[in-house]
Length: 195
Image 1 (cartoon, rainbow, N blue to C red):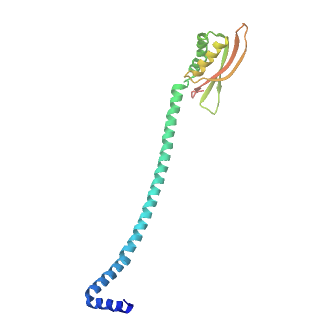
Image 2: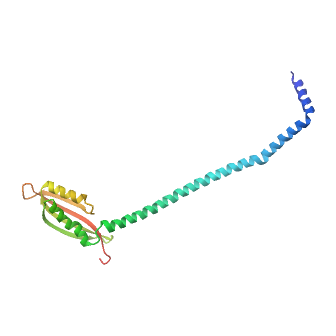
Image 3: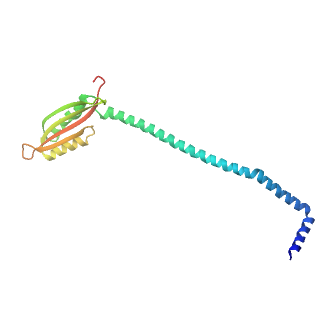
């Protein structure tokens, strides 16, 4: 079949079915116009709205993360304040007498329990002008056997009371198995407003 014959055939079909061809051509043109006038601008609008929605979600997530950090900081600060108040009220001694009982009296009792000989002791409150706490330093000298001295030190270190061993020195004692222990302990108490 030649090209001219095919063209004649197409012309004949178009002439015989002119109404149908015109309807199809008109429908096609209307579809193209609707696409260009409505669908394409709406698809751009939808893409723009999706981008704005994504940007808004990212901004909301960033704001939520910032809020959570700020809230965590506030919660952490509140918890730290509560724990500090608990430390001041339940762990630290409330005054000099309580601090002396916590260190001085307790050391004498533990020395007896561990069969150590109490040689001497002295205590000294140390005031720091920049702090609301006063440090109580207690120096003690004890004599006894190495195992007894060791268990005595362990008892002080593992006790729930807030007592810090600052310095320890060992020397030979008078007896055969005897050792001399010199120890500096400290604890803190809140200074009253009158001091």
